Picture 1 (spheres, each protein chain N blue to C red):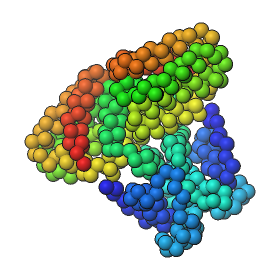
Picture 2: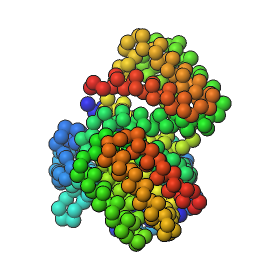
Picture 3: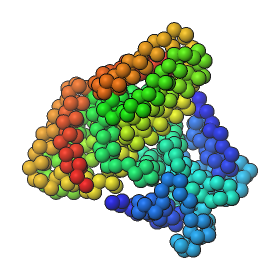
Picture 4: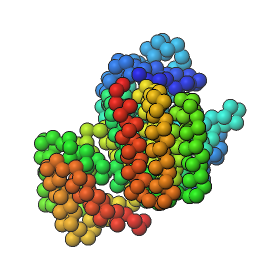
Amino acid sequence: MFKPIKSTKVYEQVIEQIKSMIVDGNLKKGDKLPSERELVEHLQVSRTSIREALRALQIIGLIECRQGEGNYIRNNVENSLFEPLSIMFMLQESTPAEIIEIRKILEVETAALAAQRISNEKLDDIEILIKAFKGSNNEMDNVKIDKKFHYEIAQASRNFLIVNILNAISSLMDSFIKEARKRILVDENNREVLSKQHEDIYEALRARNAKKAAEAMKKHLDFANEYYKDF
Amino acid sequence: MFKPIKSTKVYEQVIEQIKSMIVDGNLKKGDKLPSERELVEHLQVSRTSIREALRALQIIGLIECRQGEGNYIRNNVENSLFEPLSIMFMLQESTPAEIIEIRKILEVETAALAAQRISNEKLDDIEILIKAFKGSNNEMDNVKIDKKFHYEIAQASRNFLIVNILNAISSLMDSFIKEARKRILVDENNREVLSKQHEDIYEALRARNAKKAAEAMKKHLDFANEYYKDF
């Protein structure tokens, strides 16, 4: 199924080999990679090339080195897009407005997908978050709860490409829009407004109403985005 | 503006330093990086750490090594998401259906943005592509033209985050859905249908009608996606 990319450099070939093992199902999340020595013997390349390849995979968050234990495929590879996306964002001199725009597009449609696919368990998880948000007047806690609320909805879409891309965009927002999520909560009255918006989204999800879920998410993000405009 | 990520490893610190130079505007697209020797002196770390950091940046497509000349920030950083996205895709055992789903969400809304922001020059470029597609009965040529057509519309949205993410998704489609774009063109009659759909999108863009552009793109992708379903 996978069409290998033409590569000329040795470390690229090492990465291709590791990718092949993943495609063939010989390496899965959480698995230990062969040792550096084994990779040297197996692939007949220098230890330096092996190390470079492993470092690169570490940097994009796909493998982790556990002290004294070796290299493992990460169980959580959800953050592997953030680093390249963030450097690209800076090099292209992109603007925070671009982040806000793509986030809205994806989240609105993701809410519609979630409405069609959400499990009862996930609905319960979201209900708990809504209550926690409503009951807390700690800004920092509410920033975290709000982030989790959006993450759970992305998960409920059951499209992991979307989950990963939204994750990277969400981290980008936290990096490039100063105190983005906190800003809106500085005004005490907003907590009530946001709580109501969260509830509307939840109700639409519970009713498995895709159109209403999208509309409620759109309304929520349009309100929030007003606060992200000035930076 | 940029909040540094907590890093403990030396090569991560090297990457952070290079990122700082980008944030501060001291490194731009196409610029030459300081030599390995200069980086060693400047950052007071080992040559190995410098090399590992540079390799990692090469792998995610952000810098390129020109033989005998040194390392340069790439002019075209648009492909730097594909590698991590592709490995992530495999590790999560995601399905081609997920690719098709996110592509549709993004492209439909991107067409709406493009309708609001497209320049007359870009409209002319797109018109040329439509005529070329119509006039050619070479499958492989038409695959390329179709790809370019979608790329130009993404560009016209003037949101480079969207352009980059769509690019990565498009490459993912080419990698994981065998002969995706060609399949639809095997049936000679489809060329006419697709030509008409392209024209409808173009007309909506030219009329700067966001709603119609989104509808026309949706119709086009719904038609195409029927061919990507069985793999």
